[in-house]
Image (tube, rainbow, N blue to C red):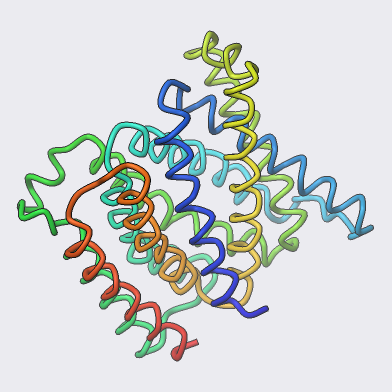
Length: 286
């Protein structure tokens, strides 16, 4: 399977995660959601290493990436969970699509990879589609970013852009399975400690049957999505993978309308297609 297909499948899992949080997890503290998601993903990759007999590579060369990833993922995931629970997922998804622009510089520093000319064009089209989609309700960008859900999504986009470059570096250093087991484990420990300190009651309540179904479902989607994304990151620059995964904006618009009756379907969907045109450029640039 090529990098484009992996990134596109990861986009679909992320859009469904937005819907799960908004539909079922509004009362669960974001850090609790992050803890469960990362613990499930870590368990999944450990199981993969055991069942497949894939050799485990100790993160000697990649420990800075592992530690950096744990901080970035904790912050990004908490912001995304809060934004999805409080706001429109058809706004959160498009703003998150800005993340490829924040991958270019760190990816160049860590891995020496820069987009080609067609790649730059694709990134520009994706950015234009994102800005258009985010402001499709007729308000200015200043008004848009006065919303807490929009600000949370922007913060998550910045962290995700840097995370893509860090993950690419770590996965190339020791291999995707080993890196993902280590990074998810470190993130689960960090977010778990923070959840115990700030949301102990929410952590205890998360084991109730209805909440458990929600956090496990969200965790399995995250496990699948990050696995596909990180594998794709070993094939091409991080900005390319992030740009394709941001096609989750289209799925988020459709799910937001179908499940939650969010407004401006026509304009938001039309603008999302512009972001997809940028993604198609990246396909030919790869």
